[in-house]
Image 1: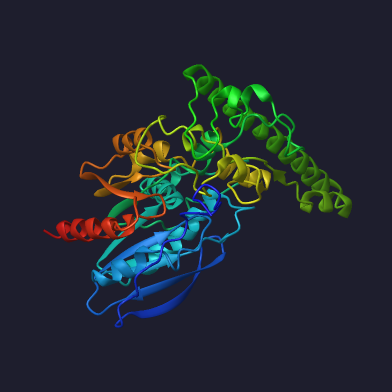
Image 2: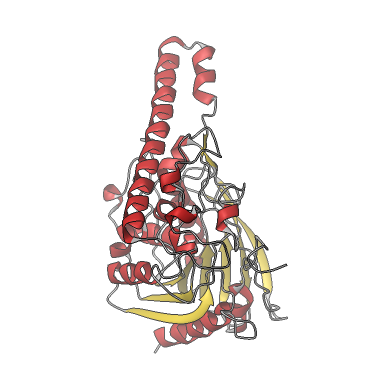
Amino acid sequence: MTETTHLGAGRYIEARVAPDRTVTTVHELVTADGAKVSGVLRTVPGAKVVVCLMHPRQDLTHHVLVPELLASGFAVWTQGTRSPNNDINLVHEQALLDVAAGMLLLRNLFNTVITLGHSGGGTLYAFYQQQAALAPESRLTHTPAGRPIDLAGAEMALPDAAIFLAPHPGQGALLLRLIDPSVSDEADPLSVDASLNPFDPGNGFAEPPHASHYSPEFVERYRRAQRDRVARLDGIARAHIAETDRARARFAETKDPVYRRAVLAPRLLTVYRTDADLRFTDLALDPNDRPYGSLFGRRPDLTDYGLVGFGRISTPDAWLSTWSGLSSNAEFLRCAPGVTTPTLFIELTGDQACFPEDAKAMVDALGARDKTHLRVPGTHFGGAIAEGQSTGAQLAAAEIAEWIGGLAR
C-alpha cells in the first residue's frame, strides 16, 4: 500500500516512555459557571515549572510532548474542555472558563506556569490570554450566537509565558480554507459545482501522487466561493437560533410544554466536505516541506467525502463560535495582540495546517515584546520530515527546554 492510498497516514507519532520517577495525579475541577472538567498532572522531583497542554476538542493526555517535557524536568498538565473528543456543542467562550479553572489550580502549585498550545490549542490559549488580560468588565459578554457568557465573573489567571507549536489560525479560520465550495446543495454530500471542483482535472487537479497546479484565477475564485459557503452556513445557523429564540419567548409567555420541546429540540448543521484546501494538492501554493495530502491523510480527493473531518456536525451555537471563519471570536490573528507574556512560536517546516504565510502573520500579530520564532523540521502532528530523521516533536521539545531555561536567566 502506497502513502497516497493509506488514507490516515502520518497522524500518529510514537512517544518516548515517561521517566520512571513520574508521579501522576488526576484532578476534577469546577468552572466558574458550574461545569466539571478534569485534568492530569504529571510531575517529576524538583519540578518548579509546569507546562500546560490543552486543546478545545481533543484529549491531550497522551500528547507526544508529555514524556519529552517530563524528561527535561518540567511538570506537565494536560486538561480537557467540557467537550472532549466531541465538538458538536463546543462553544469557545465556555472553553475559556475551562482553561481558567485549570490555571487557578496550577497557580497554587507551581512557581511558573507556561501554556503550550499545539494546533487548535494555540488559538484556545491565545483567546484565553486575550480575554484574561482585559479588565473583567471589558471581556466578552455574549457568544457569537447571542448567548450570555459571564467571563467577567470568572477569575482568569494569566500564565507567565506562552509557547505555540504549529498553531493553526483558529478552527474557523482554518475551515475557511478547508471547506469545499463546490458543494451546491447542503443536503447532498455528492453535489458538485464543476466550475469550483478542486478535484477536477479541468481546474488543475492531477491524479495523486502528482502535484496539482491551480491557476491564480481559480485560486481567487475558489477562496471567494469558500467565504460565500461559510456565509451561507452562518445564515442557516442564525435562522435556527432565531427559531429557538422565538420558541423560548413563547414558552416564557405561555408555559406550554410544546414550546419548551421546541427550545430543546436539536437543530444540527451537517457540513459536508471540509478537507479541500488547495494547498494540500498544489504544493507550490505557500510552499514548505509538507508532504502531499491533508491532516487526515494522503488522499484529500477521497477524505474530503469521508466522515472524519473538521466541523462535520455541530449545533448552530457551536458553528458560529468555533467553525465559522466569519463569526468566531477564536481567531489567532484577532487574539494575538493580547498575548503579551514572553512567547515562543515554533513553526514546523512540513506543516499542513500552519503554512509559512500564516506563521509569519501570526508571529507579527503577537503583542509580546519578548517573542522568539523558530522553525524546526517536522509535520503538523510532530512527525519527521523524512524516514530516519528526528521527529518534529523531539526537535521542538529540545528548543522548548532551552527556551524555558533561558527565562530564568
